[in-house]
Length: 460
Ligand code: 4AD
Ligand code: MG
Image (tube, rainbow, N blue to C red; front, side):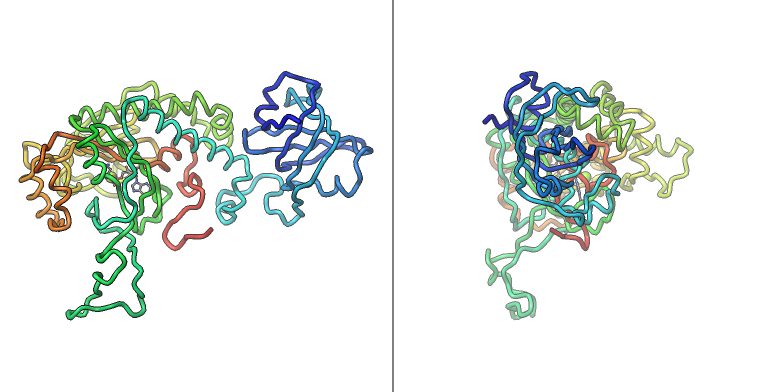
């Protein structure tokens, strides 16, 4: 017996052959004589229809073929007479692997995304989440393909770390100490020399610093792994656990970095358009009628490149009343990012930020005030990418670390790259879920990750 996926069966024109389909029942409808059972196995957004002659099946079997049940149906693949599908299966035998009674929460359609979040263990069985997670897979694959095709090496940077790469202090502690009764030193503070690693350790916020070490050897590398931030940001764009892609390149300046970011994002969006058509059409119909236009805009339009100073000028001259006034020296707010992206009608890349609001490792410009940071701003999502040219000068870097209160003693390994064969280099971080948010047209980041971790929420 040939076992094909629903996707393969639906695109087959090899009619009148015996086939077997296994999957979950989406709907059952019909008359006294025949039942039409729509089956989905997740290989595609589309269902295959099995046509069941009621007289030839025992009542107890058919009665259990309900929404949510898992079945194996054997029969003949035939050209469909009905509307909406080209092929269907004339069922000859049916086995039920698992029944689902009327308490199965996904009866019919029309559940809110909020409700589905509460049953995140079952939501993969909906059309929406099937589509989102097939797109997510395709994007992960395309990321590896892009880098592999362009001579980058994939480096697995550590998840447990002793350093705070961003210097923002938003880390989750990793410890095996008994927190009810921790060992204490003479000064009364917890004695972490007794801890598993003999020091304080945390979950990483970024693989960048370790990535830089490898770029200083393999020239072009990237990381793609989970990162963790204990920031109390309960927004539709923040997760406490998210995946980040971080390329790091020797001999790239900030302009090369922008060229790469633009080419990379265009490639990914084009890949989705070329390879996820059915799912994107579905999401476009259901959630965001403008989705296809937005995706095509990214592929076809040059990203706008401006300096932070120019951005502040544009915001001030906009005549718009922002909740937070745009002032040189302050971080760009969501509303500012939105305005810039709308004004230019394209993704915007901002460089030359005040050094005070960016991480210690960013290369200082000749003005001594701004750094070669680079953020890529997208419609709705806001900051899609954050990156920079890195400070490769040892002395300047040490001064910046002092200014930003980065403990030098923990960072000797990082500083060593600047002591031995230092090189100009650059890199950036792409938030994977923010990419998926944009490509799927979903509006809440909790709906593009299998099991979201957010403040006060680590279910499943
Ligand atoms: O701008 P960030 O903090 O940059 C870094 O971590 C650098 N080490 C990257 C580098 O240069 N190698 O984060 C990078 C991106 C952001 O632009 C955003 O897309 C995403 O990571 N991101 C988040 N995504 C979801 N939830 C959060 N809490 C995020 N914080 C950052
Ligand atoms: Mg950032």
